[in-house]
Every structure is written in structure tokens, then in C-alpha cells.
Length: 108
Length: 114
Image (cartoon, rainbow over all chains, first blue to last red; front, top):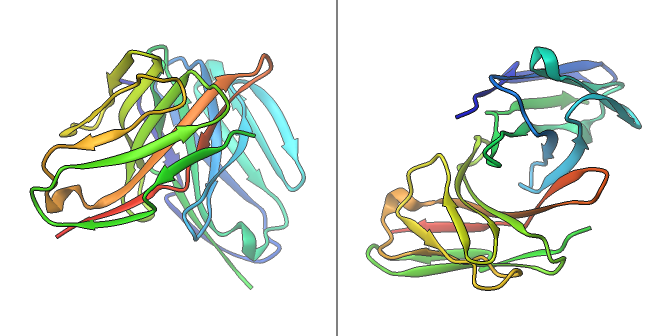
């Protein structure tokens, strides 16, 4: 099945800093989504982005499908951005597979 | 936005018991999924469904079973619970809106098997 790798696995930043999270995938995908899991465990959908670039406030994402990677940018980090960020891809078999996540901790 | 309901929120049971975790969604989504997640770790796909009477196994070997008799209902059953089943179980549904497809999650069931 399709493999999803996220980097870095852990990231600690000072409030106000910018960050880039990466998601690599091993095969063509039908779609790709980014999620944020907050410290209370709730999963929030950030972007649906099988290709191209999208922006939502301080967050933006870019997927280059031909090169099989996606990037999530977080600018001017806030403590509420802390949590785990997951990339999830849907392969041609309709399975939605998650990466291991990037654990982000923003220090006040 | 989709509304997905999971019950119970927390469950503590003894080894060998049969349990069913409930999942319902109110938006008429065709695709539904069950994931298993340990705290802060990746989500493992254990079952999914394209629609009524359609169920498939995911990538994680699981001793659970699912059914999809109605579009809105996708229960997960463990015939004989073991301590290794202790984990959080997340149910999700998705649908194509014409512009994009989103995966919506319930709040999860935290299962502890003693």
C-alpha cells in the first residue's frame, strides 16, 4: 500500500516563529488532507489539497503531486498551534492512510 | 459540517467481553472509516466502507468486525476483548462535495481492557 512519511517528527519553536512541515508519499493519490490534532485529541481538518496551493489565515499548504510531496506552512506561531499535525492521503484503492505526524510545541 | 457521534466516550471492560462501539453520522456520507490511535501516535486504518453492505479491512490487522446495514450507522464489534485492544478508536466519514472531499471525525471512544 501507499506509504506516507512526515518530517520532522518533533518541532519546538518560540511563539512568533515560522515553520514548514513536510509530507512525502510513495504513489499517486486521489487526494491529500492536512489535520491538526489538538491536545484534547480532537482532529480538525485544515486543508484538502490534492494539488496546488491554498491559504487560510496564518496557515498555507502546497502539494506538488508530480513530485509526491506536500508542505504545510505555519507563520507567526501561537501557543494554540501546538499539537500534532497529520498528513492523510487517499490512494487509488480509496484507503485513507495517515502519516506518523509532526508534534509541534510552541513555547510562550 | 458533518456531525459524527461515537458512543460510548469511555469504556472500561474485562478481558473476554464482547463489545460494540457505535458510530453514527447525520449527513448521508457514503464513505466511513474506523481508525485506532494510541496517544499522540499515528492513526491506523482498521476498517472502511464505501456504502451500505460494503466493508473492507484496512492495513492494521484487527480482530474486530464491522457492518454497514444503514448509511448513517457503522458499528465496530470486538468479539473477545483483550488488553492489547486498549486504545482510542476514531470513526470518520467523508463525501465529495463537488469541490473537495473532507474527512470528518467523531470524538472517539477510549477503550481500556483490564
